[in-house]
Image 1 (cartoon, helix red, strand yellow):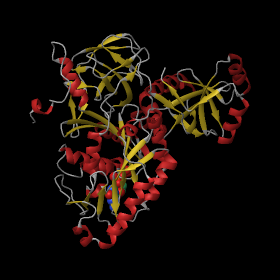
Image 2 (cartoon, rainbow, N blue to C red):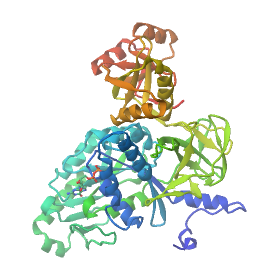
Image 3 (cartoon, rainbow, N blue to C red):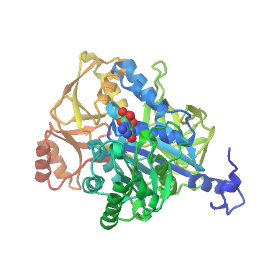
Length: 547
Ligand code: GDP
């Protein structure tokens, strides 16, 4: 372990007599909490593994990969349980790098893409965007970046797979700027690509890092040559260097220089090129996260902004996950610490229920295993055992009435009509859906007219999970049929009469969600647009905050 007395000289000192405020300030300042946004197959798993390798959290490549391949199995009940269990274990990874505590929150992709993926992004302070340089900006990345934009989350960009034939780097930057509406500030620039990938030129440091293929080791050093006009480079790569100088000139002229403030405001993203599988360019990203990405910041808690360095503990639940073991029906509530220090055994207040709870068993998430947590600070994630009374969006404190905002529900994009085989089970069905809805597993809509119940989700696996859990936990054999609905919008208005008219006239497509909010279920994008035009006094929202 390291000698902490030497590493903390530049961090704030306590002003009071107690050492605690200084310790909280120090611990908060060295935390970085981020998630990866990417489209499936861009390289998130590979990169995660390399990040852990650098930190020394894992010794060998292959650990994260093995977990992932276990995820690609058919989705019968046990498989789903296993998948979810696996994602509990790898859903938060905490490791240290250069005296910093890094919390990497997993953003489930592939078939387990769900609303959780979105919500995780409300609990991070920055994000790493991974783009497959051969493919450019893909759909899932666009959706996830939209969520980041809502909160002005700072984004670091990694253009991956430069060891393959990729698209033209300038064109890639152009695409990011025009599709994702974020300025690009290249920090490194690739020299060649595919078989002719020679390395990257660091625009800020004026040095070239030479590419060498394939290493699974963390301590691999890539050769660095100073100065773009270094004769050695000219000798080694006569053709490529001419090309590089031309491109660098173009880049300097056409793109934005890196600006820390713009990055922190979420307006600009520093861009790095590399190859995750070859471990190339990975250390640079980790350094960017440590050097540039923000430590935990103040969070809006309705009555006031809560600063991370405040001495008293507070936090909110952003995700709830059922236990992998079907014999134990307990769930884990994922809580992001927003201020103060959490200690095991401490009493905290569950503010929605106004109830004090003693938290004696808490799990934290290390890269290698789930461990018991002793203490946690702002930015850290702790797992609270939950017997069904915690909900997504719930706030906790040492007593002060705070309600953290910014943990939204997202408009579902997939819909199913629920039918049951045994009508006598209707009560259990309603109870089950109510609870699963509160847990955030799925969204439940009850149209004003008719007796159908509509389920909404953003990933298909959500429906499978709900069907299995209805069967196993509530004894309800439900059938889901496709619904002719293409999108949902929450509706609000100051004009009560307009709202009532809307409900009366469009009752089959106007519904209440599990929390009683009014929503419009559109049959097509054209239908949605026309409805919005016809009801100018109403506002249609694609997200809604937790009550
Ligand atoms: P995820 O779906 O985003 O988690 O992507 P993975 O990390 O599983 O990567 C998808 C595929 O791309 C795998 O076959 C990886 O081996 C491959 N891959 C990842 N990074 C690189 C890279 O830098 N170069 C090449 N050539 N392949 C890569």
